[in-house]
Image 1 (cartoon, helix red, strand yellow):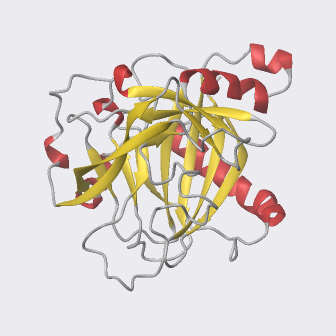
Image 2 (cartoon, one colour):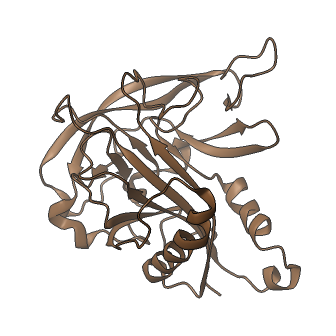
Length: 285
């Protein structure tokens, strides 16, 4: 995190305007159910407000974005997997590719891919729910970071079960590897917030409840200094690698908020976005 006034002149380029949903109000700590909640419980106890923000085209300065500085970077990384409709095949064949991508991007000693999510937009969606059964049961179209300080800290033990091996780790991170499954991506591209423009007070820990477990993410309060970027027309051979947690407390990006958005310049008949997002535990020691 850096001063609000810090600017990189290379990043001043063509922009679009998108509506991003920020946390507006909450009755206590935000809680979101990802399944039909118990009787008498709302799907969520918080509200959101859409803010129109400038989102810069990152293509002209693509090589200038660095994972440890801005929190994200674009990589050319073709995949050998032709179809992404079988979870077991994805784990067996795609996870090793993802681990290699994350290792190259971070310079880590070891990478363990631990889960993935395939998202497909459906015609007629009024919100960016990507097929979720309830419009309020998805953080995809809202500004969020997949991990909080607490859940990022806990992830090491959930993935690396060996106590002795875990004790030797001094620094680790969680990164996402995001790939489009249609090309070019015109519908609902992914907007990335420059990690340097996010202050600690902008982050609000929110509980995400599933039938058999609970998680914690960060939702974001709106702040005018947030700097947003996207890579238009992404192709299937490209991936976005972005930081969701880093155990190193200073000197590097730690949290990179993101959200899908609707580009007002996109044709109404643009192919609906499909993508796969894989999460990796990155071990530096």
